[in-house]
Amino acid sequence: GNSVTQMEGPVTLSEEAFLTINCTYTATGYPSLFWYVQYPGEGLQLLLKATKADDKGSNKGFEATYRKETTSFHLEKGSVQVSDSAVYFCALTTGNQFYFGTGTSLTVIP
Amino acid sequence: DGGITQSPKYLFRKEGQNVTLSCEQNLNHDAMYWYRQDPGQGLRLIYYSQIVNDFQKGDIAEGYSVSREKKESFPLTVTSAQKNPTAFYLCASSIGPGRAYNEQFFGPGTRLTVL
Image (cartoon, rainbow over all chains, first blue to last red):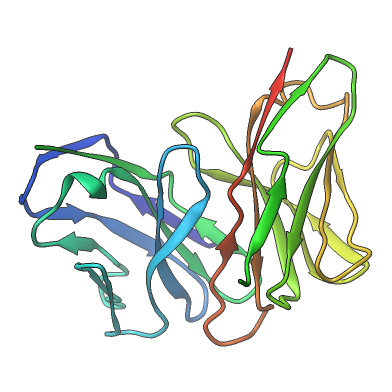
């Protein structure tokens, strides 16, 4: 079956620290992979995506590379800001349904 | 602006009442979804619809019902049979199954509280 496993939180970092949130997946076929971000009390917003192996998705300083050999899609940012504090979800789709990880809460302190 | 709207933002329900949550999209998407989110947890799929007049149960459909009479609308009814309905409800849409760049777009959510 299809599933997503992501790093448990919460994660607390100081401003300008390096961020990595791990995400691994299990999927039949060739999934597309996504990272979504959720701010308190709001819906999810697409942060970045990758549709095939070795693609790198990037947005707002965040990056993730689709690694088929390790079935991973880890989220990275070189220097986090207080405004990056949110919950981050890794997700995949093989065409019909979408499968989400449980979310990783990030708090960035000044 | 294209997007997904959900209303109301906050909803209070008495025990034993049915309530309907609205979800409308003007993205011309074929597929629409309802998720439930509990505090500190991920998303659980309630129902989804890939085309007008058709929908399928997700992982936690018991106590919920939906309709898809129009492409742009996918209302969710939380019935009195749902034992613990207090949660944050998210509606989403996507262009449709089997399409390239098939990401989901989410509405702002409705927070339902049972009094």
